[in-house]
Image (cartoon, rainbow, N blue to C red; front, side, top):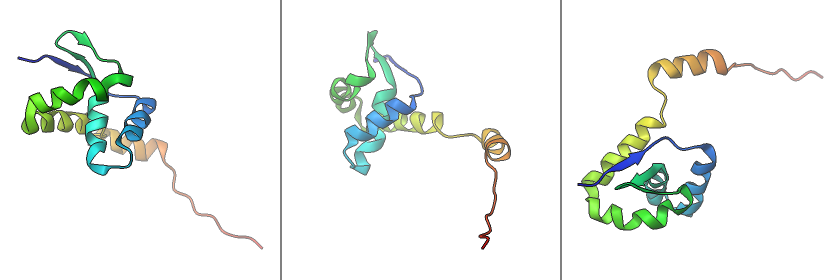
Length: 101
């Protein structure tokens, strides 16, 4: 059995993961998910080394398990309905501008 500890990533870590994906859309979700892995079998994984350290683990886990990790990442980084309502109700204001002349 493998033990993985994951937690949500920061904006800085997101930028690092996107950079590692080198514009390859197929790699983007894996890089984002890998950078969220903080510990594997009791050994810490630093975000700056996640891609290198976890490549072999991805192969060992297989497609079905890796997909579950991707799903976890997606859920953790997506607003639920209540958070969305709060965001659009409190944080976003729609305005229009009129040119004067």
